[in-house]
Length: 142
Image 1 (cartoon, helix red, strand yellow):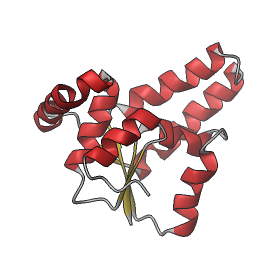
Image 2 (tube, rainbow, N blue to C red):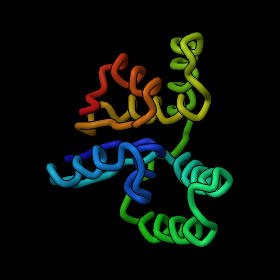
Image 3 (cartoon, rainbow, N blue to C red):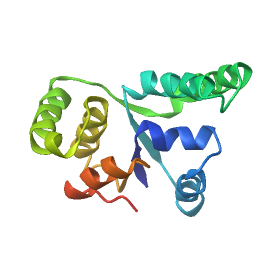
Image 4 (cartoon, one colour):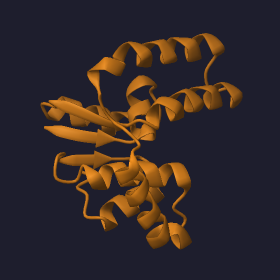
């Protein structure tokens, strides 16, 4: 099975928190043959880690370890570049959902998932608002 994860879903595989079990179960219950990620995840992951340090949820040592684990795993993922196709799709999605709260970086994740719609079985986010947009675009989220 091929899947797409946004950054918040991916992060839950590296750091145990609310929602981690749900994401882990995808891998336990299914044979995942490819994990697709937006290139923006490279930036968002590190940003998420340091936010956890600022919020005193993890230590700096833990942050560095998480970032190193992620760096070590990068070659295992299929990266989707932010190219003109993604930018164009993002612009359309912001026009469609901007009034409902779709934010810039989330729109890049959504655009990537929409572009991959026919290549992946599951597209997963743990962000409730973004998940609504995933479902509105006909993406299978379970």
